[in-house]
Length: 485
Image (cartoon, rainbow, N blue to C red; front, side, top):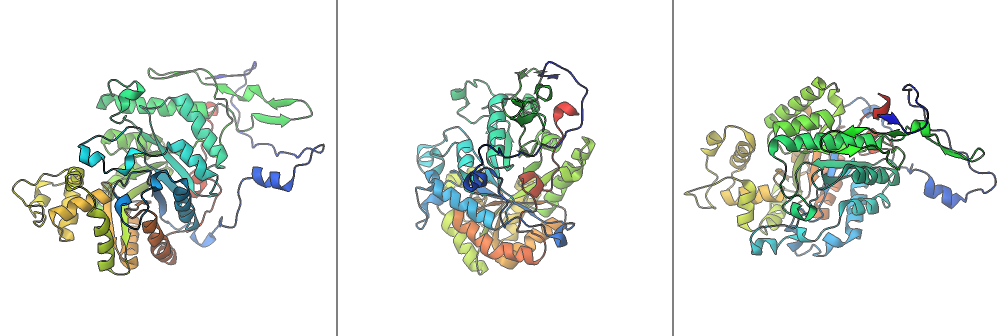
């Protein structure tokens, strides 16, 4: 690393940004001041009673086509995949409940598969994620904005500029979900041969390191804005990264000052040993897809232990478990809501999503009991256990797996859903949940109106924003500038 100015100084502690003094020659209007000031509205609360109590962190999945059959429900609009007002309403509803962040799953590739399946998918036409998140940033104040970007589809300088810009636009709410592989359309992006399994995580680590070095180009107090002396920046506090790691090169600073969070939130969802290791070493948030508390406990402990071995604290990584929630006043009503959505999935797609073969069985047979023994561990074992616990047929199991996008379905009432969430939290099987909504905004509204108030009553969900940035609201420290370590 070298400094970008003409002088070289020893590393110094980061100083706070100087207060901006309004110009006496041209006072700003109150309206302009309101536009420039970070939001500090009434929904930011500091609940001292819950300050030291472990509470659930929640993320709301935004579907830009991901839940690809829900558009067929008669009362839902078939046009919402390209209706920004729909996504704004979704984001504002989640924010009104104090959900910490939104999460946008995304892929740049056009879907592949049998013609009749592809023709049924909502995901054939979706917004580009950065543009969409910038639009949501302008219409929300507190909720986080995490979007997906693949290291195979992007380049560190461009991604760093997008992330830092979004963090400034949103006053500290941006996040990046790191994906390590391209979609099937990678050839459109010049990717003729995807990385092998043993190298894709090496590339991902190199990409993350390069991106964060660029994000940290400016020290926190590098921008002076001294009108009297005509000095906008201090060049001695701007750093040009010296990176040549075998995958990426960077020797010029990013043309953008350091973001409010220091680093935008880094999220990761890899489930292989290498993927979990990458997340434990580099991520602030890790998404998991466990079906049982026991599996969640194993994952939670493995990630926390690996984080500690990498020189981090256990609380430096927030683990969120994906769960597809369907609520009803009664169990029967909840099951009927699920059935309305799940039955719309082509059964071939649902079976493929489940990933288990059933030779010699009819799809309407009860789920075979011997499959619990056959699959002694892993996702298949968890699916089998879930099916047998709930008395499901093979067809019903496949549909449930599909509506949850491979995550655990949780179908029930206010009390049963709240009991489930509390059990996972108290067993140290998760730090929170990524809420997947098979019924789109109607499903989110059910959770906001019925489940979250019960979680607040139990004291395991804040329902408010204790800080101003996503990092603060997740209970994470602001990182020191890489170039000053």
